[in-house]
Image (cartoon, rainbow, N blue to C red):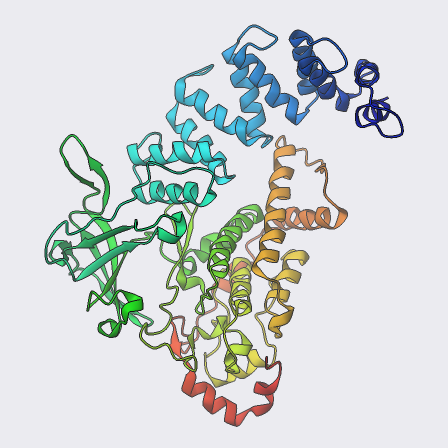
Amino acid sequence: MYDLAVCYVKGEGIEINLERAFYWYQKAAENGIKEVMIDLAGCYENGEGTEKNLEKAFYWNKKAAENGDEKAIFNLALSYYNGKGIERNLEKAFYWYQKAAENGYDIKAMVNLAMCYENGEGTEKNLEKAYYWYQKAAEYGDERAMSHLIKYYEDGLGTKINLEKAFYWRQKVAESNKASSKNMDQFCIECIEPHMNNILYYQELVKLMKIDDHHWCQQCNARRFQHDFSKWTRGFSEIHKAIWSDGPIYSWNFDKQQWSRQTEYEVVLKIINNSSCLNNKFLDEWKHHYNLMSCAKKGSLRKCLPDIVKCKWQDKLQLLEKIILGLKVIHESNLIHRDFHDGNILMSDDHNEVFIIDLGLCKPIDDLQDDEIYGVLPYMAPEILRKNPYTPASDIYSFAMIMWEFTSGIPPFNHKAHDHDLILDICNGNRPEIIKNTPKCYIDLMEKCWDPNPLNRPTIIILENIISEWNRCINKYFSINIDGNHTFDIPNIDNQLKDNILEFIEANETLVQVQANISIIQSHPQAYYTSRKFTEILIQEESEETQCFDEFII
């Protein structure tokens, strides 16, 4: 009956006849065929094949919703909220919005549920829950939710004031190119204070927002920093941790006619080596440079590995996808990171965001010679160790090492000296040992990413597609099986993807801390995890082991 109705709607094998389609939709629905109830409701709502009747549309929407139809659940919530075909009932609208949102059926339902919590419609006002659902919807790309999140972070509604995250979501709105983001700060702050040429806080929005002659830049008075309590060196930089007494500007106070600042702001000051030699491509109007960044209190991804390795696979995959999306931005900008490792990925306080740093700073910024090679050895692709040019595939190899870390909880090759022998081992195909209970599909992808031939590695687009699909399906699995019955029933996926998801589910079940045995392995005293210069070492290796360096030259 349902198939016959569809034929009448689409004119397949017969002329289009909406009246006959309605007749067969009705017969099928009255005989309890759940899938057709939402179509019958649509006929009544739009007057297709019958007279428009909102009450009957509501009736069949309700029947479909009660039988689990995703679209009908959201439609029913809208009907109750707007009083469409039924008396307006905000409590029932809230109930059905909540059901749709909690099962991940509809992003719009998440936003509408957040608005119910925000305005106290159908439930008690609760800004914390409103914030939670706005955040969920924003992560799925809803612009309305992003706009609300900006206000929540700026005003401390339902969460703590966090101007970095407010700025982050402003950027996301701008990136979508669907909204002008008129409240974005589109101006340059010029000469706010004299003699502030020692430290630069700079975030360029010109290319991102495609706006001419507008960007956000702030110069900062070095005397306003308390930076005498922490100093360390890292790679090619000298780093200070400091408190910026004034704090960064985040808006203009029209009442007081002055800038509003986030005072006592914790930052990191990174001195760029040889920065006095910068050419005009690198802001040569300032002759001695610090790079000023917000302080990530959780530190680098490497510091968080002991916690990450204990996470369920759905959490690991979400974090990996965020790292991939960051690397994707770099590659789509025709750039290569060249020093991609867990020390150059910072974690937000709630582990919900990642920040890839040191792009273009993996070697002295005034040393632009292609024949200089820098990096952290375990993350360096074999073609780089053979002195071939960096390519995006080199970053993919490094990402494979991060994938492995998520299964082990430790950096790769931490039990070996990072010397000539390890260089030869990597060139000869030696890779970290596969950790027990790692899903096979994950191993297969990881091994493709660290393939010795860069041409065989997946692109960042392919990587994103695979891991985002894993994420989507595993989240769908847990939303369907929220009651704990674990009845695998994810529609519209092929058998291969279904098998992959089952591997992750089974790996969760056997998530005994096997990794703990690995974590107790002491790092080798000659294992180095800061960037070093390898040019001279590789020249020596090339002369001693020509066979290794001749393979896969591209």
